[in-house]
Length: 72
Image (cartoon, rainbow, N blue to C red; front, side, top):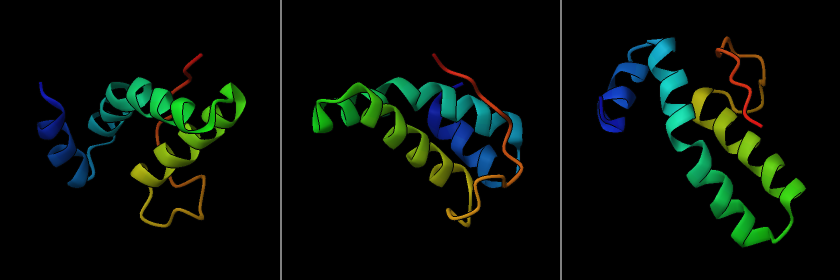
C-alpha cells in the first residue's frame, strides 16, 4: 500500500496505518534532519519530534496514544 493511502487511513484513526506511515517516512525524515544539522544526535531528536507531530493533533502531548515504533 502506498503512503498516501496509509495517510488517509491514519486520518480516520487507524493506528496501524499511522505506525506504517511513521515507519515508511522515518529514514527520509532522519536523513533530511541529519543534512540540516550535521549532528546525528540532533537529527535523532528532530526526527522524533517531527514524527510525534505527525501523529498527534496536540504536538505538546507526547503520549497521545500512538503505537510505539522503535527505530535504531
